[in-house]
Length: 67
Image (cartoon, rainbow, N blue to C red; front, top):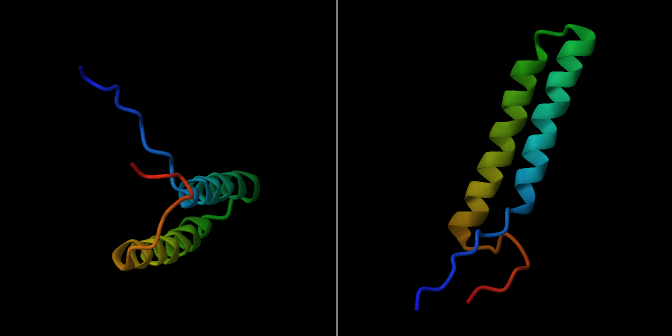
């Protein structure tokens, strides 16, 4: 019998990245600040490098049990 495939839980960092980009869009729209795109890109690089290092070191991304 084929078991159903469940999608993996989203890592906690995914929500933070989405919020960062959403806030950047809002600030750019409200203030008309063109430079916010660059600042957001630098912040995303920091977050992605941090998550990459954690993944490389084998740290868990969430508290979900693995089979």
